[in-house]
Image 1 (tube, rainbow, N blue to C red):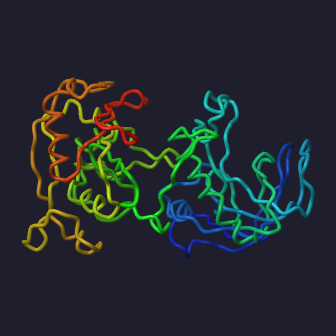
Image 2: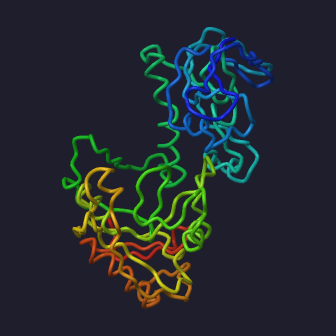
Image 3: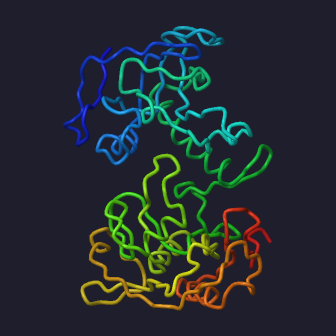
Length: 360
C-alpha cells in the first residue's frame, strides 16, 4: 500500500510518500480502507521528535480515521467488508485496575492510533475490533474524521476527570456558543497555585524549562505536582503564579470566583513569588497585554511572600491552613479582583476547602 510516513525526525520535508508494509488483521482486529484522516497537533509532536513514536521508526501518523472495512480477523463479529466505520483512537489494556473498573481513558498503558501504533495517513490501517464503530450514512467521511480526538478529549474531561455519570445534567460552556459567561448565575474559574504551560511560546513567569530543566524551584514544582502529560508524558513548563495573566482570563470569561488547586505542591518553600504585573518598554501594566509579541517583551513585576513549612495536604478547613498560605491566597484574590471560593489541597475530591459553594 501507499502511505505518508517518516524515517527520521524533523519538519515536513521528512515526510515520505511511498510503499509501506500492508497491515494484516490478526485475531480480534480489523483492517480499514481509509477514506478520510484529520490533522491533529500530535502529528507535529511525533514528527519533530518531541513525542517519539513508542514503537520506533518508520512511523505513519494520523489518529482520526474514517473509512470502510477491508478485512476482519478471527473472532470478529458484526463487521463486514465495505461497511462504513469510524475508529475510536484510544487503546486500553483491559487488564489494569482502571480498565477493570471501567475507566479505560486513564489506563496505565493507554495509547492511541497514529501515535503508539501506525495511523491513518495510509491507504489501509488496522485497529482492535472494539475500537471500530459504525458511521451513519448521513455523516460524510470528512465530517466523521473530525470527531474522534475531540470526543476522546471531551470524554476524558467529563467522565474521567469530572466524574460525570449517566443521568446527570451538565453545562459545557463554549466561547462561541452564544451564551455569554455573564448570563450565567456563577462562573467558577479553576487555576493552579502556580502556573504551567504546554508547548512553546511566551511564558513570563517560567521557572522550569521542560528541555533544559535548569531551575531547581521549577523542577520541584513539576515533580511534586506531577506536571507531565497524561497521554504523551511530556513535561509541562512551570512557573510562579501569574496573576496579571489570570486577570485577563477573568475579564474575558466573566469569572465570579476562583478555585485554587494544588496548593499542597507549594508546601515547604521558603519564599513564594506572585507575578502581579509586567513592565513593557519601561511602562508598568497590571494585566496581560494583547498579542504574543508584546507578551514576549514583558518583564514580570513580582511580589515576594513568605512560604510555609507546614503540610496543607488534605486540609479541609480554611482556618487550618498555615497563616502564610492564607495570606498567599488572599493576595491572589485581591490582585485578581475576585474571591477565592474553593481551595484544593490534594488529589481526592474530599480534599477541598469550600468557602462558597458554586451551586448555592
